[in-house]
Image (cartoon, rainbow, N blue to C red; front, side):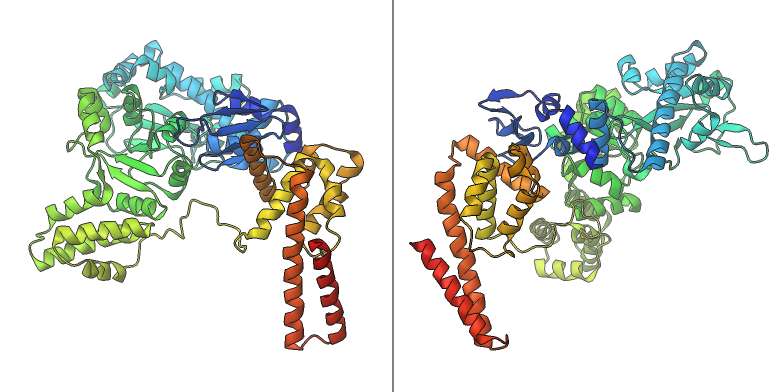
Amino acid sequence: MVDNVSQIKERLSVVEVVGEYIKLQKAGVNFKARCPFHNEKTPSFFVSDQRQSWKCFGCGMGGDLFTFVQEIEGVEFKEALQLLARKAGIELQAYDAPRSSKRNQVVAVGSAVAEYFHQQLLSERAQPVLKYVKERGINDTSLEFFMVGYAPLASVHLIHHIQERGFQQQDLIDAGVGYWRGTTGEFVNRFSGRIMFPIANSQGNIVGFGGRVLPDSVARAMNHKTRDDVAKYINTPQTDAYDKSATLYGFDKAKQAIRTSDSCIVMEGYTDVILARQAGYENVVSASGTSLTQGQLRLIGRFTKNIITAFDMDIAGNSATQRGIELAQSMGFSLQVVQLEKGKDPADTIQEDPAVFSKALKDAQFVIEFYLKSAFENHDVDTPQGKRDSVAFLSPLLMSIANAVERSHWIRVVAKRLDVSEDSVWEEVKKGQPTHSADSYSTQKQPEKHESRDHLDTMRDEIYAHIVYDPGLIKEVVDNIPFIGADDTLSQVLQNVKSSGTLKKNKGKESVLASFNEPQQRRVDAILFEAERDKRELSQKTLLPLLAIYQKVILRQELQNLRTQIEKGDTGDYETLLQKVRQVTEHLNQIDT
């Protein structure tokens, strides 16, 4: 995989990659722009062609072309690697060949199947279906944009379609489109006779489908049998490319709007998303149901921590939905609820009067407010029992709030509304165990265990920045730290630089920077960006005083350690320790002079 990364970096420039997403302006030796990861008016996002890195001084984010694609696309490293490899025209060396190949095959089949279903919807034979779809408010542009389709009852033409493109019936099985009938071994399209909604992953690749049964009137017009014993909606089962619990319908089309608006509107159905998008709401997705999962929340969490739910049901009375809300709160999300007229979904509301949905969105309540209102409606809060039941109803939600300050705020609100003390609400809330904990569902990677960074760490990074900025200063550093022990971090890093052959081969800044580990590279890169921005000098003149201070701190620490060993009297050779004390003291005196 290292070779893959190196090849991609040789062929692609970070300026080229970033420039495909945002407009860059020349700023001295660098490029600048308004940061795509937070809202700002004055550009604080810088890209260095020389160091092949980027840094935002507003939000603190930074890295190389891989980290940029990971952040802007909301993907993991492997997905960013695949995306950039395609852009660079590089065939990746296999790191997970069998599974990766299977997943790619499923995606390729999905695209071919979606194309076929879409063609069928637009065919003369499916006019009753197309008429119904348009009556639901979906216009021609959205039909094309979302690739809405229709799956005919017969599968023979679907099979021919994919075979013409080099696929086999087993590929349809692997993609979850069909299955073998147990008794006859015949291929069966699980979606036959349904309106089709292709589901894409975050990169826009079709990985699955959602299928809606035809209304009776449309089914009769199509000469289909009407059935009451089938599910209204079905989805692709789990495949190598599709996991319903980690996929959101429309997310690939909404992710940039989610980032820009710093909010995500979550709806229940596919049509809800399509009509909302037609009405101008681009930050909309569907959870294909009303219960958000951990995987779906992680996906959203890469772009925002603010979720607005717009479901066509009483979510306060739905336990699955409440579990999803508690999970979201435990993961640090702020949730609001859009209240629609009972029995109407967002699609109905938008189709009848977009202004009504717009107002409902503006009037969205924070989820605790919404549940508090429900508690008041369902319990007599003028009685002790009503107050008790209300607190019991709200406790799991209150406990699931990850942020202590936010939780304290809502407990104060609940206590005031119920006319009871905060302490009494706290006591009842603490009695119950949270349904989900923030620790169990953290969306962030656990930080590496290390001591807090001190003054020495900061000085080391400054020294590293000097030798990356001017590799000729490496000799200056080596010549001026003769007294630092081999166990010192700076000495170890310099040894890595020396052993890499950088000095002998007379390589440039990039080679020196590559000698550091990834966290060191990020910190050094940030210092270099800051120095360029502030026109701060990095030279022998600024390096030598820094080295002197660094040596003093290291030697004083060593002196203290030696004296502690002598005082404890548990080290063996007393005279050897005294000799080391004299040597360290002499070195300190030499630096001072």
